[in-house]
Every structure is written in structure tokens, then in C-alpha cells.
Image 1 (spheres, rainbow, N blue to C red):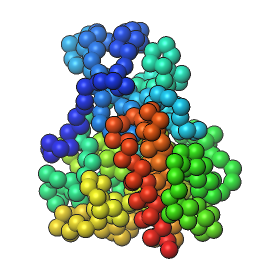
Image 2: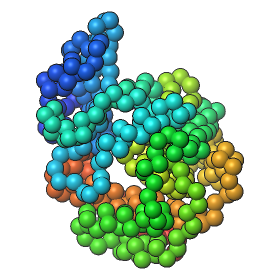
Image 3: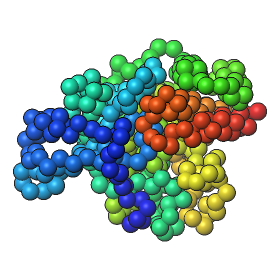
Length: 353
């Protein structure tokens, strides 16, 4: 196992602190095997919803672990940080063949425990790779991990969302048009200055919308860093971070997953690496494997889907940057997101101009 892939947590300090006394009372009231000795630490990252590891004792003497996800404090953008949606999709996907943590409990208003909405889910043991070059793995292992990531996404996109009780999340009207409008609004709400490439994309994207086609459950942030890989085997043990899931266009999900092939900066990019030597498929091969799994033709208008996802990512990064300026950001690295927002927008424009 690569040591760099073992999830590590940080001690709580400042804004990270939780009311452990209130959480202790809640767990004692809701978990039959809870025996106290509660400790909490925070997972690094978490630019959107802060995420914590709760460790405690169980009555049988075994260690207990849960993961807590909550809204950040402060004034938030409309429709962002919907932890109740995250919690709901975990329950819907249980037993579907898409591996997810088990939902445990939710407090939609947070009070009187933490103040902000939060939920608890099971802790899934495994590896989380933030670097897509997968340092420490063999060439064969890298290829197998990428294939497992591809297979899990294809499985998600072949589920019948109505049979899973998610028909109520369907929205009328064209999906892609709605998404462009939504992320334009989110960007405008968080805007702190003018990014020329964002203005060009805001004008270009609505004029070049592909047809929607059949809609499926989409993750919205599907990438290697949001997967727990089995501790020893090259398979996906859990898909994490469902904040942006929706009933949407599968190629939006696939294109977001493929952004790593277009990014160079570490640790998120594959651009400039010798993929054959690493055992990692190129983008065309990865897309072809997905299409074979779901039974569709290679996508047309591929550049649109890539550009849209970079546009969405730029809007999200701008929101993180705005929260940093307002003093409500969930991560100390959030101020650096402003420059990244402009970079993502410029790359998107290069792909379609």
C-alpha cells in the first residue's frame, strides 16, 4: 500500500472545532453499541463541506469509527452545501452495486448539536489517491485502478433512478441549458472581479448546447480523489462526496472524470506524463472503455462537455475563494482558489475557441 494514499486526519483547531459533548450525547442516544471515549479529527481538503473522522469505543471492545460531513459556517451561496441531498443519495444507492458508505443519521438543521446541518456515515477502510499518477503502485495496479474507476462510473450510469425512488429529482426542461444557467448564477453570486474567459464562456456555452439524450444519476464530482480504493485490491470500495449529484447527462460526469488528462499541475493532472510507462490509459482509451460498458457510441461534441465542466469547476473555485475573503471558507488553502478559477476558465476557452 502506498503510504501517501492512506487517508490521514488533522487535529481540530480554531474554526474546525466541534462540540464533542453534544456529539457524545447524540451518539449515546442513537448508537446501541456506543461506549464513549469520543475523539474527532478532520480530513484535509474539504473546500466545500468540512469532513471529520469520529473515533470512539464500542461496548464489545472494538474501536468504532464514523465520518461526519457538515455545512460550513457563515452565509452560503444558494443551493450549495446540501448535505441532506448527499445523505439521501447514500440511502438510495445502498445495494445498487455502486459502493457507498452507509448513512447513519442526519440533522438537517444541525441544532442543538453543531449549529450547521450535518450527517454521519460509516467509515470505509481503504486508500484515497489524490495524485492520479498513483505513486507507489505497479504499472498493472495503476491500470486496474483506472479500470475500476471507469467500471464504477458506468455502473452508476446504468442504474434506473426511478426504480431507486429518485424520480422526484427529475427536473423539467433541458438539462444542459439548466446547468449552464445554474453555474452562471453561482459564479455571478461569488464574483469578485472580471475573468475574461468566464465572460466568453457565459456567452458561448448557451449557443452550443448538445442534445440532452437520456438522463441518469450523475455524481457531479467524479474523480479518483473521491474514491476509496480497497486497502489491498484494485477495486473501488466506496464513492464519496455526493454533494453535486443530480439526474443529469452522463457525458458531463464522464468529461469531469477525464479532466485529469487536460491538467498538468500536481497533484491533479496527468498532462505531460508518460501514460504508457505508468500503465494508465490515455483519454481516448478510457472513454472507449466507458462507452463499451454502457453501450453507447463515442461522444460527439466532446469539447463542449470538457469546457462545461471546467466552467463549472471555475464557478465552484470562485465560490471557495469568495468564502475565503468573507472568512467562512472550510480550508486554509481556499484563498489560492481564486487564481485556479481563472486558469480553469482559460483552459475551457482554449478547448472550444
